[in-house]
Image 1 (tube, rainbow, N blue to C red):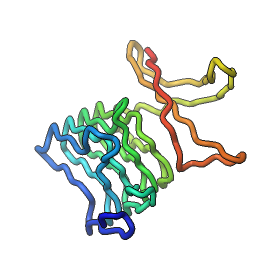
Image 2: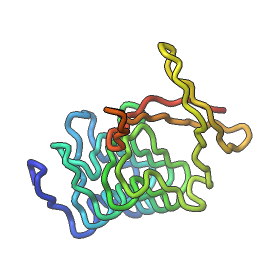
Image 3: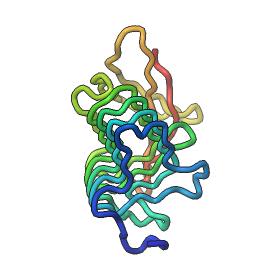
Image 4: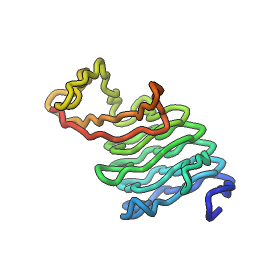
Length: 193
């Protein structure tokens, strides 16, 4: 509803981009006025055989008053899509509390999931076999506080030779010694390659 108290979702998914629906923008240009895509019985957004779409400034599973009204499926699902962008520096989505995965990339190539706040879902980001050429997530081994110099993070990535990769870093808020997984904050990215 308009004040985000009661879920008024769709019986299936929230937004569907099917075959031959390319180059769409879902979201806006103002982060203070997000689309609220929540309370649906399926996925929040399903992109299927659709390419080069941009998703920015959406609250997927969230609500205007910070009350989580989950989608019953995944927050975002991409099936056989190419070149889709979920978020982006300065254009991230909040994908939280969905009953399925935050983002499920089932198949396709060249899809980017960047600068989003993804938390409280069954799983954060899931790439099935074959999706994005089977690129595994990086493995972070250690975070070391360096005082005024920031934080040093070490880890490894399985990479193809002569390729560039973007690795993003996030932080959870800690209050009273408790890590709050719902408050995941994008910290920045680094280019490896």
